[in-house]
Length: 146
Image (cartoon, rainbow, N blue to C red; front, side):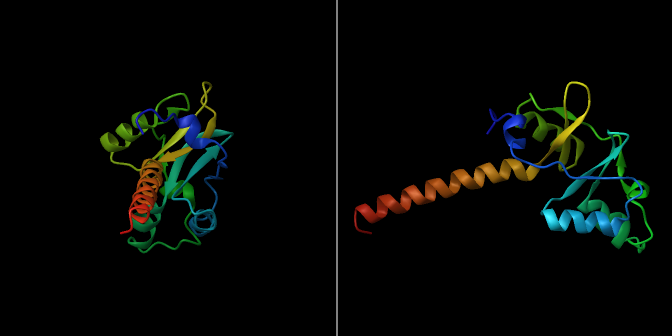
């Protein structure tokens, strides 16, 4: 896992974004439909912020705000830390651990948004490797008659 590059994690992924004017409900629907936990909030093609499922829970639901009347720009985290696609995933995970967040926007050399990595990306690879090991163990057990 430490050698996986962010560019390989992003391969084949779509970039999902929101505007500051999008309602929280619309943003939550977009995240639900695409099974993602965060959206990049763009303004003039640049990252203005990030809106996450935690924002929806902590800043909207728990606070009793109306998701149909509240705009993403009111509750997003502004100016999030970003990372380049040429960095190892481990670097992004370190940023998340140090900063206490679960998503890091990925940008190109000019700061244009490319995608997002999350703590789940590391877990996903670990799960794939665990499944392979379990399958291999099952094959070994089957071949010796357990």
